[in-house]
Image 1 (cartoon, chains in turn cyan, blue):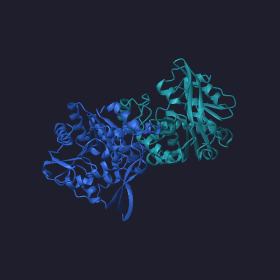
Image 2 (cartoon, rainbow over the protein chains, first blue to last red; image 1 turned 60 degrees about the vertical axis):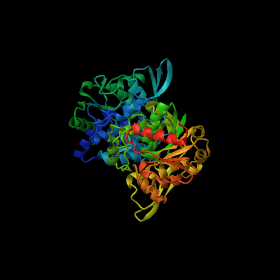
Image 3 (cartoon, helix red, strand yellow; image 1 turned 180 degrees about the vertical axis):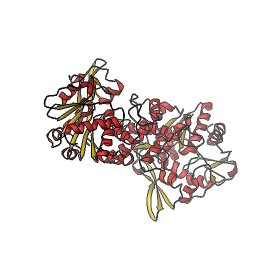
Image 4 (cartoon, helix red, strand yellow; image 1 turned 135 degrees about the vertical axis):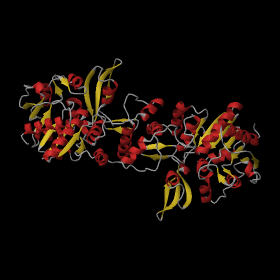
Length: 314
Length: 314
């Protein structure tokens, strides 16, 4: 069996650990198509938060308490950059993490596409799944906000990390999406999958930027594989992160049903919601309820099993 | 009084601390024209060892035991890069140091010349002297060597750090020197000086690359200021570093007299040697003997005083 997962964010990385655990038992191959909209160049370093979250989490090197970045991280570089007055100072740039960014940036500068760079980094982390960036092209999520009485577009990281989303927010723009091409292997992984899963990631800023790459939405919606999404909303609240603020911005109700309807029947065949949200109704989509708290890998693997069952491909 | 110093290496940085101490007492302004031949790009970072040695030493942030780099340095990045298998692994890239290189590289990438970048970094370190790179242009010292039976040119850092000079060595090449221009302020600092000092730096790989920038040798040799050099050789041995290997490569005797003759009367007016080397004779140059061990700042300032006296400008 081949399972392809659209994913982003920390929740997506944790979900993938469950997919991997399920796949090991079921003898399945897993490919993760990872959001790159969060990617940003800071201090000359190309930073790919979602790819790194997957890599570190599946490589067993993530910080489980902080959620992002490396366990046992140190912050010498960050302190030093601040001492130089180098902007921005609000981004958490750990020393270990910087080494990853240095290797990545050096390879990108040498002309390797992000997909090959990611594969090279995975030589160290051995995540046990094939990791593909959604695209090798520049695609950045920017946010149209009002700051100091001025309307402007800021990078997603600035909105998320610096402002914690606490600024009047008008819309999200996926800069470069129009001209982006799916990274090598992405369309093949979707078209050749037995099941496509949509991780319980932020639908607006983790999954939407993947689907914004021309060709990917069509491949998912029109491909042969059943598509099952897992709700990132439990009982009216995001499991983690700020999906509530993002959904409010795009005018979608912060419920499992709301997010299911946002994806809709043209994308989804099945929609897995938490038992709390039993009865969520998405026209044209088969819904099913199961416990969706990813308390540990076993619980997460069980969720994945429910999603696979829902797809009818178990 | 205006003192301009040609300098490079760790000995040169230590010498400058003495020049600064002398200048504070004498009410003099100091400009350091610093070698850039050691500069190298590694892991995407533009590293300027000689500029940094001066900056850290005069900023009181250098490691006095190791000689180079920052005191209290940590090595997380270096270990991580090695874990990724990122080459080269033989270069000592400290975490604090990396922050300096990140700021520098970001500014260079943004289009600022090295001289402006250096001034910006000095906003933090306040070295108390004006620091100028010899040139803003690319000038790198490469070394023609035999490695594994093959003759090739390697970067000076590879020769110095990786091989410790222990390979058959044929010559030094200052790549880019022909087309390099003196950095803004360099010719003015030399032409407007009351005294020009040549630090007891490695004559072959610290001072020669400075003089290889078209216009600088002429400005020093033909300018109005007396030029006094300080010998880096005491009693037939280099005070530190590998001047002996470098001098052997260019066929110069490893003595105070040999180095004095290498610079020669067209460059030097005075040549300060250690008391051990009393009697060193450089045709056309006034020699003088004084203790040249830079044991502390006070002893070094006394050396500088002797050099200034020798210039006749005290």
